[in-house]
Image 1: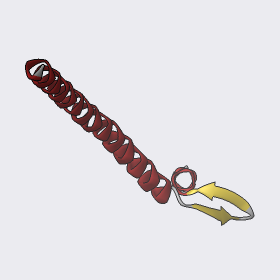
Image 2: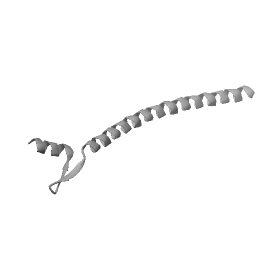
Image 3: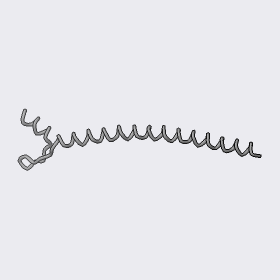
Image 4: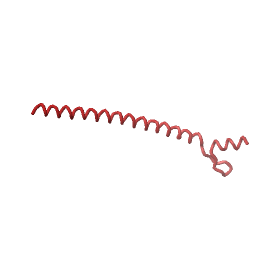
Length: 72
């Protein structure tokens, strides 16, 4: 009887360890995905900061487009 009980406890322990390893690896995978997403969102925020919109002669113009118009 005690051998069966010990066997089940060891089996449950092994299953919990496997589940823990799976959850840990999945969390690191998700962290990498979200980290890449955060980096991309920061880049897009910086790009929108560089493209400052301002009004020129009553026309709303983005910074890059205004520079192109000045060069022309």
